Image (tube, rainbow, N blue to C red; front, side, top):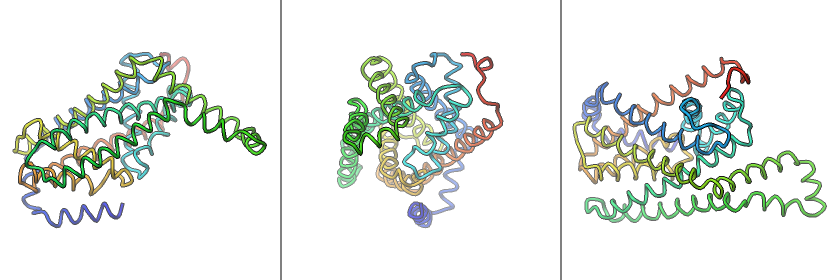
Length: 329
């Protein structure tokens, strides 16, 4: 956190603040509203992808709205905590249980599935952006090499994460550890926890093998979410008074997301995200102030969305718990 704040302070110190302020103000209320609408659309895609992973939930707009709101709360805490973007996941599970009656086994499995499909889509999105970046002569060769290495490392980790789920590695590990006298005693003491692990593992395998259409649709919706991030950059740049090609917007967003993935341990990737926008926008437009202005627009959108999510969390805390009759599906 301290390193991120220090980097942000350094970037601002090196930037012409008056020029930055003048550039950012060009977005105006209309531009900020459009940016928020685009981001809200990407959130709908994410909520719809999550909905596909919930076996007992009907595919209707009522549940889409519920998941959208729950996700807003969870993502607010994901952004605010240095927990690799999963700090808000338990909150989502608790809200689904408390207010909509979904058991923890199903919600836990769905959260893992939603995260996995989003990450698999991210690899495809970043690979597309990397191909465009490599073919762009304005980007320095060292930057291309770093991006390539970063994507290979990230992609390898995500594929392994998927394979661990697909082949029930957790359950297999638990099974081997429960052998022998010590293992049997441990298994008896942790019977409930081990049963939960096996149950979640089975739900994951079932989704990947028996519900392949939903799996593919969830990945597609995840890709649509990342694609709308490109549209957000494209729109923001137009309102900043510097229209760019859509391919440039893709390169900028892909670079920012790759850096965010690599700096997951920093809350909201503060400092690192600004540095990414600064470097890539300088390469593509020759205007470093524009890159910082774009980063500032993104931060304002993130803060507004995070505050909205936390406000929703407060509203949920005032609501009565789940009632079978009041929450009929």
